[in-house]
Image (cartoon, rainbow, N blue to C red; front, side, top):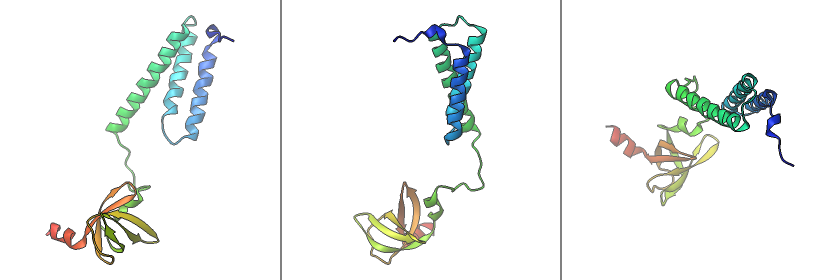
Length: 156
């Protein structure tokens, strides 16, 4: 069965736009919003120009979607949102600068420290268990540490 492209009306685009907006409500990012807006504008263009071929409709939708996403990324890049909790969902970042005692030695660059009720994998120079280290960075789910004396020597 072949799809008859001439039966596509502005209502189809508006329904597609509404579906994108519903998906946007269920997703955490502003991605489908712009697809919904592009579908809505494409539907409006088809209402104004009912003879618009399906190829041009598709091209218009794709172009509007890309333009909306590009503009959105430019706006976000130049106007980042400030937060009163910038380290929210960045659990490891709050440990940078703090000192901890090794619960396992660092062997071949890998070891473990206990932070509150959790154990963290760490990366750093080989040290024995019980040594005090300072967290200097977060690399994914691994904390990069340096010996506490090395850290204090660097600061002086």
